Length: 315
Length: 314
Image 1: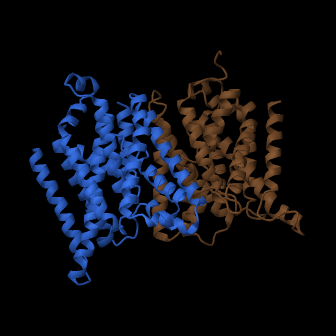
Image 2 (image 1 turned 180 degrees about the horizontal axis):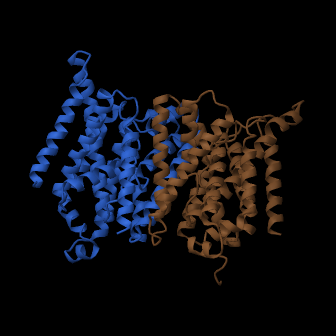
Image 3 (image 1 turned 90 degrees about the vertical axis):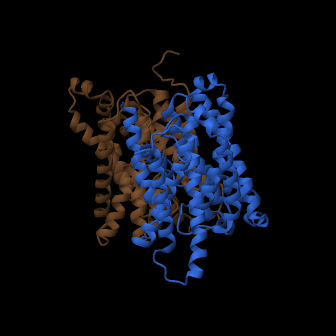
């Protein structure tokens, strides 16, 4: 099949899952259901695109198909930053700020922290992929431990402010920040889209990119900053889902054999929407499970990860 | 000398641990009862769990021949949690001992599968083993969460997956003594584990019953992990960090180093527990969380520090 056919097919499945999400199992008047579910759908789609784009970008700048921002502990870092904010400024103090300001400040803080931490790491050990993955996972554990440490130090009343972000959830999405996250995501996506040709170039490797007149390192840092923004969007909405990005990126690479970001980025977005919205519809409406989709995705994604790693290494 | 210094430190820490708590012993009329029912059992539980986990970690490292694995993060601990969860769900009326047996069996199965996966990994990729272990443990953990969520048992899960000692009282921790006995037993075959760590060919060549020692190692690791998970909860990274540091300082002859690992493991967890009790007095921070921070930092250091070893020429 040509890429065009596949793209049309993906667009169709994404649309079908969105329609199913909106219309299945409606028990209330449509005038209530449509806006209510519409907001959730918008949030889910935003998350889907943020996760897929950040993962594809991250994989491009690290030259591999196993690393994702979530595996490297980006999500956990976001929650740690949120918790530290509550710890140092107090939950009440934080509530005085408009949620928009809190979100934007945390996103930028995450981007900068990500730059500092992973920027040096990416450049330092470059070749030794396994050591980096291991470091990322350990960072994740460290960030989670620090978070739960700070949470214990926080006044229980203030704890409720962060409790919501600490767990992955899809069925109770906080739509309040939708109007903040939407412009942030759109700006980030536009910035990414402007870079797509240059991304194709750095994906060829440092030497080739330099030969073609592209300074990889600066672009890598810019991309890392954008990844930070996108990760904060997805984590703010649904919390940490470690293997979602990996699952989507791997599926996209299986479906489409294209090195071009012009194709990869939208395709990954569509796959992501299908997986998230479709998965949520099936789990919530068809199987009527209470289990969070995140758990299911993490189990499936974890298996994919194991297979990818073992197969990649025993070549 | 090195034993004496370690034991002395441990005694000091244990004494501190006994005299820290919400109840002021000088004001309390029945101070002795507080010490006997709560403080001493808690201190003992910390010591047994810490030393048991360090020993289990070092044995597991010999079994898979990799320095960066340990039972609590490579599936054994999660397997034990899965076992006890299933035991609570399927046989709610079974005795505590029966539930323990089920948890140990599940831990054994989980470690066995991990070992089978590790065998497929080429020896040229040493870092792949801990990575696969972490993901494998995470997978079992996710499955446990899934079941617990469906059965409305998430609260219990928190008790098993996050190690802490605030609930330890006389009569509630005694199962740990079985773990202590098993760990002690491993000392008597420590030299066989050392040989096992040299690989199958050398082990057989030296006249070791490879399969039998392997099975005994797996059993030790599983029982110690399962008992720890069920009585006080999982404490990750103790079994990884402590054996690595001890082996860098004193070498790999387990017969000599196993007691040191027990002392250091107990000391490390005791420090975490004491810190956890003091930092937010009168509330507590779980020892597992405290060690999660200390342990990961130490692990990162071990991962990036130059590999210097006692046997290297300096």
